[in-house]
Length: 123
Image (cartoon, rainbow, N blue to C red; front, side, top):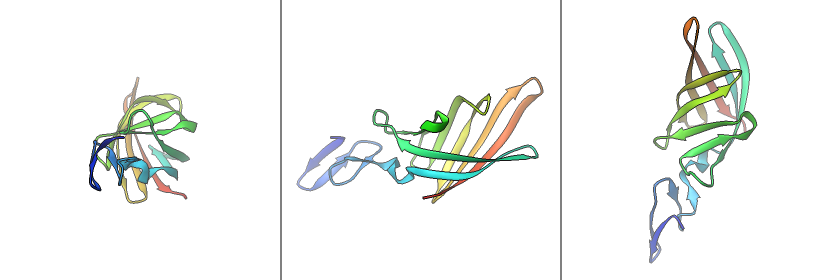
């Protein structure tokens, strides 16, 4: 259990909710997202299938992309330094209803490069 329940009232631990504190608050974001990654003048289609972490309730994963999203609030998250599309990207993002928006950056010999992902729930 992820909280204390007394007489049908539960005081759930952080990141948990429900009648028995058995549901991750981030489970509302689970599912497939499809969108566009914009980088300079280039764009590329992207997709993510987000699932909850059973061990760390503040993290969602996209296993196919081997990416993790570390939530700091119910709607905002950090994108810690991780390999994606051949570079080590980092950044931050937010969930807005059925939209996932992520601002990313990496550093190369030319300096800091920026990218933006906007992906909508597909399911």
